[in-house]
Image 1: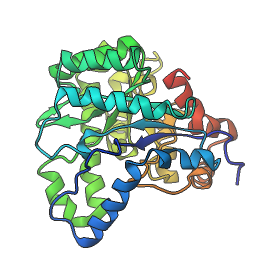
Image 2 (image 1 turned 120 degrees about the horizontal axis):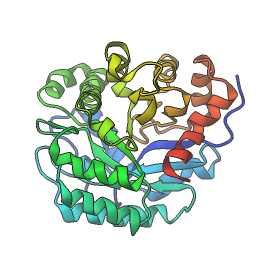
Image 3 (image 1 turned 90 degrees about the vertical axis):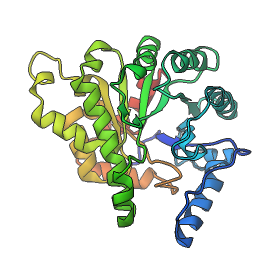
Length: 314
C-alpha cells in the first residue's frame, strides 16, 4: 500500500447551523429515524467538522449547506434564507481558516436573485464556490432560470458543486429497495442534469465554468464519453476533461478508475459525503482505493488535495 497522501481535503462535507431544525422525513422506520437523528446531530455540530482535521486524517474540508436538510419537500426556500445560510457558513469556516473552505448555497433556478446572492457570498464573505441542487420540479440546470447563476460562477471563476436531489416519482419507487435504490434515484438526476448541461451546449457557452458532480453521476459521465463524439477527439475540445469533475464518494476502486480513465486524474476530487454516507476517517480507505485503482503517487496527491486546491484557488 502507498503512503497516505500528505494532505487530504474532503470536498463533499455538509453542515447546517446548530440552531436550525433539521427535517426527519415522514414514514421512516425506527432504524432510519435513529440513523438520521444521529446524522443531524453531527451535521449541526461545527466541532465535528474539525475532528478529522485535528486528528490528522484530513488537511481540510470543503463545506456546504444543503437547504433540503431543513426545507420540507415541495416547499421553496426563501431568498433571505440563503443569505442567512451563507452568512452562517462564513462564520463557521472562519473558525478554522485555511482548513474549512465554505461554498455558497443558492437556488440556482431563482434567476438573477440567486446570481446576486452568489456574487455577494463570494466577493463579500469570501466563499469559494457554489452548491446547487441538480433539479427543481421539471427543471434541470440547462434551464434558462439557472443561466444567471451559472454565468455568475463562470465570471467569478468558481466551481459549481451539483448535488443530487430526490426525484419524484422515481425516488418513491426506488426507496423501498433501501440505500442502493435511494442512491440510484439520486444518481439518476445528478447524471441527467450533467447530460443536460453538455447536450444543451451550456458548457460550451461558458467555457470557464467548472462543474463538480458526485460519483452517483457516473452513468452520465460514461454515457457522454461513449456515445457523444461531439466533445471528443484530437482537437482538444473534450468538454468532459475540460469542465467536469467528480468526487470519490463511496471510495470504490472501479468507480475511481473509470472516473480517471474518462475525465483524467486532474478532474477527480476526494469527497466522502460526510457525515451522511461516511462519518469515519478516510485516509487509509482513500489510499487503499487509489492503490487498487492503480493510481500512482503523483495522481494520488492530486486526487487527495491538489485538484481541490487548484479548483478553489487555494
